[in-house]
Amino acid sequence: MIATVRPLAALLAGVALLLMGSGLLGTLLAVRGRIEGFDDQTLGLVMSAYFVGFFLGTYAAPGLIQRIGHIRAFAFYAALSAATVLLHAIFVTPWAWGLLRLLTGIALVGLYTVIESWLNVQAPPTQRSQVFAIYMAVNLLALAAGQWLVGISPPAGFVPFSLVAVLVCLAALPVTASRMIQPELPAMPRLALKALFEAAPAATIGALLAGLAMGGFWGLAAVYATRIGLDLQGVALLMSMTIIGGAALQWPIGRLSDGGDRRTTLAAICALAAGVSVAMTLPAGGSGPMLYGLFFLFGGLAFAIYPICMAHLLDHLPPEDTLSAGSSLLLLNGVGSAIGPAIAGAAMTRFGPEALPGFFAAILGLTALIAGGRRLLRRRDLESPATFHAMLRTTPSAFELLPDVQTENEGDAVRQSPHITPTKENR
Image (cartoon, rainbow, N blue to C red; front, side):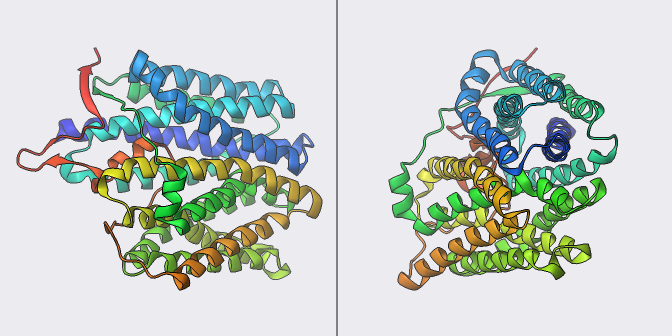
């Protein structure tokens, strides 16, 4: 048992350090960009570049990892990530930051792919649900913890960028020191978008629109916080409250969606999230404890949209299409995430910081109308009832951790998945 737990602990420690650094960097760039005089539209485009890099890296990472192995690939991507982080403090221009954010997205998706594919091999077949749940909890808690590191040193200096680079380098230590079996990454199939839409229109459109909203949040929420006059501690509190809300409310909302038509739940939470977003634009909701409470509720509601879309899609597909459908929905959500910050940034430049929650309200209100309209137009029977799993948009490898999509030999508890096959031990 200890031999099984130890590698999992090393991987989870690595991802926690990595996400603390990633969470700190996103907030740090927003604050530093405001200090440097970048307008909201410029910062929105810079932040969009990260999601473009994440999208491109999804295609590039598997080939590199297959060619040089997991440990060397992790070291390669960690070095690339640390270098790009430090270069942000040297070349403080929008064009440089856009390119560096692109490279950071490529590097981080490579790091996540290594960790998630390794977790697939190391997780005992009987404990896959628990491992996936722990992995998601570590993701959210590390992102929330990273927000509080922004006040350690003035953001106008070099030290905060150095701290991010140090966290990335420390994340590499438990992973590169490992002698774990290296998995073989499969070619990840994708379901055509037309087939995706025909299977579950509400899930397909919802995933795209959720990407728009959450891309706007991750890219510009810290900019919004500085624009309304919050200090560094206020920025950290606003970001962490949103993330903690997402961690706290995803499970109860998901259990609710398991008990009925998910389109009803999707429409309800999107409508509630849109209402919360409208409240943020009002004088009473735009400051003080009320603001933090509203962002807590927003996170709890908005973070649940994408996993509900995923569960709704899987409800209406045969099990053999689960991985390809999940990969395609992830792609669609990533496209939305890349576009969202650019649109929201342009709106904030023209209409002020209140345009960000207004953007959330418009996107989520539209999602509620589409999901509710589909529910009223058509009653559907479940083809393959799925279970809700709280999740973030990471990489296609994360889907293989879901027990719903695995084929296991229960007699001897040996995993027989055709998707990842242990090959050799790194020595």
